[in-house]
Length: 191
Image (cartoon, rainbow, N blue to C red; front, side, top):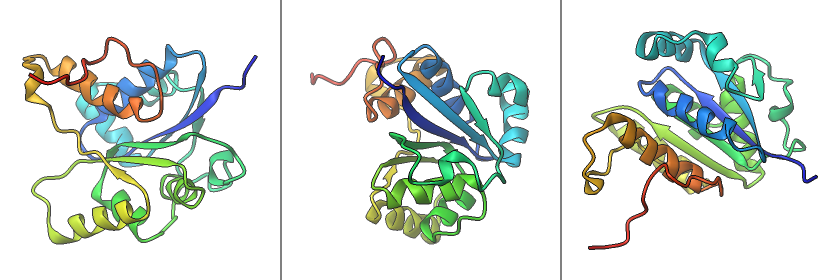
């Protein structure tokens, strides 16, 4: 039996908890994937507010859960092999921490490890409007090899369902890691 592929899912206090939750739900149905979850304190508050979901319910969706301050966790080391990391949603605070290498918690430390090991880091920043420091921080992380993926709906699919819009975004992000996303969205094939 092949070892499972590992993917870190981090959730912060930005709006859009549904993206992290939906990713964990999709990955839970993929037996070849192992998820490692980190959620910030503000992320827990947002999870309760936006989804009426308790921390324990979220944790049940992940294979492994790590505390935000557990800097000695397995995922804080480059020797622990992962396919990469998704920060969904990503607050501007977390974006700034990653952009400036400020590994003050397990989310920013793990992102730093992913970048230094040249693994895939996808950040889903949630803020609008953007100020210049947000844009510069996004540029900085992009220059380091990270991928900025603001969760913006694609209207060409002509859906009027919030669930379908979330699934399309989640499907596109997970597809970047080679996760089987069949049925989540229909790739654009032209007119």
